[in-house]
Image (cartoon, rainbow, N blue to C red; front, top):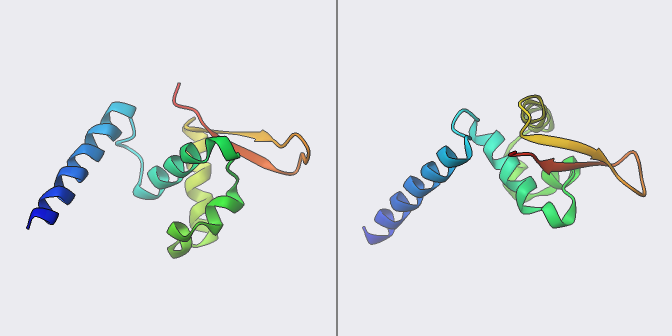
Length: 96
């Protein structure tokens, strides 16, 4: 039971963090994509990185793309062209 109590406490903390960042209206997939991009900030996250991560294996490519486009439309994510390869789209979190 102690493990379940800890898990529940973590969930409550997560909800509080999401409220503080204004993420409560996002779907679970959108939150996961945003968190992944934020976690990859040093390594320049791309759509390919998202798709190849094992966490997202349960989602189809079209579902991930819809979630990403939604985040871009809502202003949570911005895209930049790669410096060496302009075909590459670098994803950045925009919580300003």
